[in-house]
Amino acid sequence: MIRITCPFCGERDHSEFSYGGDATVDYPALDASAEEWTAAVYGRTNPRGPHKEYWHHLNGCRAWLVVERDTLTHEIGTVEFAHPGLRAAMGDGA
Amino acid sequence: MSHYSVWSVLREGLRGQTGWDRAWRDPEPKAEYDVVIVGGGGHGLATAYYLAKNHGITNVAVVEKGWLGGGNTGRNTTIVRSNYVQPVSTQFYEHSVQLWENLSHDLNYNVMFSQRGQLGLFHTPAARDVQAKRVNTMLACGIEAELLDREQVMAMVPHLDYSERARFPILGAILQKRAGTARHDAVAWGFARAADRLGVDILQQTPVTGILREGGAVTGVETARGTIRASKVGVAVAGSTGHVMAMAGIERLPIESHKLQAFVSEPLKPLLDCVIGYGAPGAHFYISQSDKGGMVFGGDLDFYNSYAQRGNLPIVQDVAECAMAIMPCLGRVKLLRHWAGIMDMSMDGTHIMSKTPVERLYMNAGWCYGGFKATPASGWHFADLIANDRPDDLTAAFSLDRFERGYTIDEKGMGPTPKLH
Ligand SMILES: Cc1cc2nc3c(=O)[nH]c(=O)nc-3n(C[C@H](O)[C@H](O)[C@H](O)COP(=O)(O)OP(=O)(O)OC[C@H]3O[C@@H](n4cnc5c(N)ncnc54)[C@H](O)[C@@H]3O)c2cc1C
Ligand SMILES: [Zn+2]
Image (tube, rainbow over all chains, first blue to last red; front, side):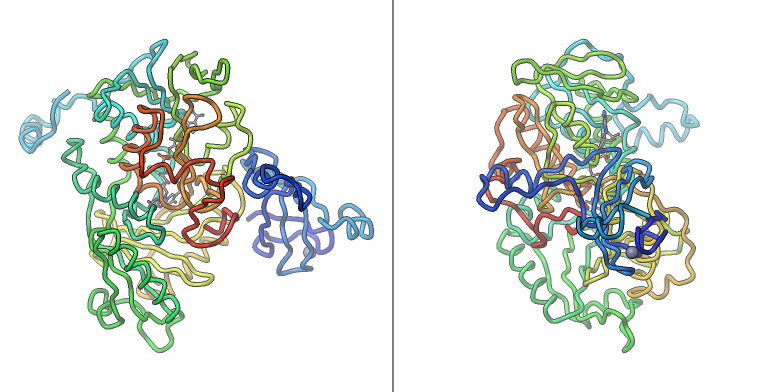
């Protein structure tokens, strides 16, 4: 079982969370070119190793988190709130 | 190398099995080949076989980092069927089923293709409508399929949960009689042996570490056993696609790697003579019985990007619940093993068989849950793409540029979320 330390709730089994995918994707402006939108919607680097990704603490505090996790070993690195306002208000992590 | 036949089996039976040759050679890599295929799973081996057989291109190497069938080919639940919703997919998979039907003879190797039929159960009137549409798509593509009602399913498989309390009440099923299962490693070994007999070099324990290019075109591969030059390179590495294509400077692809688990029980007496699958919101399950008696089954993937070929516990529980919901008689059966493979989940749930931005570099990936059944057709059409440097009629729709053109092939209508396909 992977364990993620939610900055709000503490260490929890990953079954409390829902996975939200690659957190490094920057969505372009609405009037950006089709190429930029295609890259953002469909293009993934899909790394074998460290990966920044969204997890939603669905069965907990319901905050969206940005988690650094190694896709080969499943080791968890940094965990922080996804929302910048929440990050500022609560501090960067537990 | 000898031809396998009933006579060779009898002769070796009398000689104490002492006269068998090795099934394929273990050659030293040559400095140069016409075509190098990266990945010695079923798809890579089938591609090499059809390059030699259909196109007369025999100066070919299959370069595999581990052993043959150590990837998803040897890890999957071996369901073969052609009951898709998108016509282009249905036609592609139907070509595959047709190749499966003669594959053991064609390869002179028993791949144990067993057309025991597949039942796709449905549990709500809305799901019945979806399956009726699927039957119609198949009939329109000239493929036989039937819609069964509850009584017909009960007659076929009496020991499912038909009770009042059933978590998923069974209203009926779609039946494809020509669907079934095959023996996974035999598929890798059969294609390997047949390709080898036509002159293909199979290089095991040879990881590809780089893809060589000059002026926008591929010129070969760097491997742990040295440089191998090639006029054309085809990549068929399933879950490792992102990793290998990045070696050619292609950093972003519409693919994520996810792990899918499979399970096998202790051997039982004959219990299930067909393949059963079902999907309902929150549940996904498929099961068959192997010739050794083990119940072989699986469900959803683990829902987060992963390159680790091992499964996690929440899905074990999930799949066990799915099994109990439909076949309560499995409750006391012991699990023998479970494992995971790394699947190439594409952004629309359909595979990509395509030219790439690098000239004469071709990719074959994005097979999601369903690439084992595709093995022969994948090899057939990928070989054609490589030999002719253009997609054939059936392959054109599966190109890499379909995403930017807006022609995704989204079987389940899930949108660009790979874990949901
Ligand atoms: C648990 C599970 C159950 C499944 N069930 C079904 C099913 O019931 N029906 C179905 O149709 N499909 C099923 N699938 C999907 C199916 O198994 C795959 O889509 C299919 O096997 C992919 O074939 P392949 O030959 O491309 O992959 P693989 O067999 O994975 O071959 C890829 C090969 O590439 C090699 N490789 C990787 N990187 C390198 C490198 N750098 N250099 C050299 N070689 C490299 C790997 O070692 C591997 O052998 C299942 C998959 C899994 C994991
Ligand atoms: Zn929390």
